Length: 379
Figure 1 (cartoon, rainbow, N blue to C red):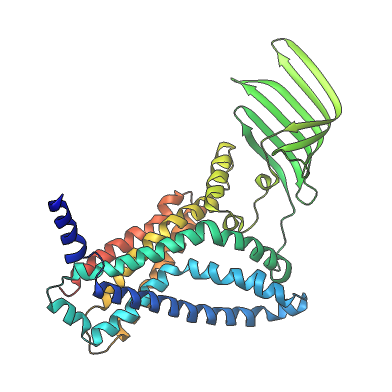
Figure 2 (figure 1 turned 135 degrees about the vertical axis):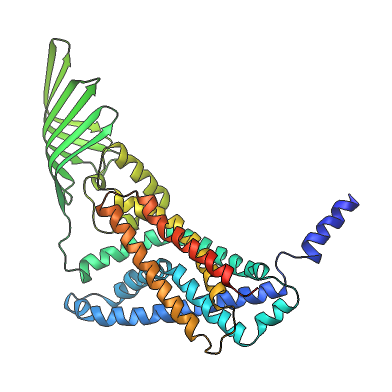
């Protein structure tokens, strides 16, 4: 027992995981990150407000809605969207100052390796990455609902999707539904057809003039079928049933029939995963934006760690020109990361590339760059 106690003292007290220098760097890191984030987002808000002021005034947008419904969601959304890039720039800013004041030289002259110096950077990046993941997975999607509603009402000039046509999907194993036209405003579909297939044979065929989603029902997937006709086929026999109205449970929801722009941004991660799984089972081919959004929420926290290592490796050396060179290279790398992210996502959307591969390609490429910069960093 005494030996175990001595071992724990040696690990956590004599050689603590987070020492004074670590706490100092973490404070510098997080402080610079949040200050730079606040400054840049404030500038973005001013530019956005100036650009959209005419639309707000023309459509009589209330100030309460502008502030609370739009900008209270705008700020966290864009802060989280570019969080990893703010990490990169923040690391370059404060690490260059440490190098200029010869603080890094003093740390390494005590025997601290550059690998050990990276520990507080990685801890800070993990904190920011964890916060970014939580906000992006559970908090920001709820705010995006009000933001997108505000944009469609007071800002956007584009046509709002109010329906769909010629929708065919698999609602259950061996059950195929078809709707010729669907009105999202009234939750009503017209010329509805439902086929049940066993093996390679259709055993039941239902047609109806209209089908309406029951918004008042406490049961999920509750539809009201009107003017229907059912043909049940068993061998050579056929049974026909008709009626004017029938309540039925069909595993379709109105949102499954139409896809609005930015809809994937309004779903929390568990709901987004469920939506992707359901649409994949139903044979939908337009789920690439949802898959990209899902994988981005996991890739972004890792990108923060990669950017922190890159930034520290790039700016740890004391230079005569100060932070100018490091900041210039950092901005160029940020632009390259955004461009690579955009191009890879476009391949997933338009060229059939795997969404998970497209999302993780920028992280993989910049991981190699981070390793190269780390090896070139002063030891």
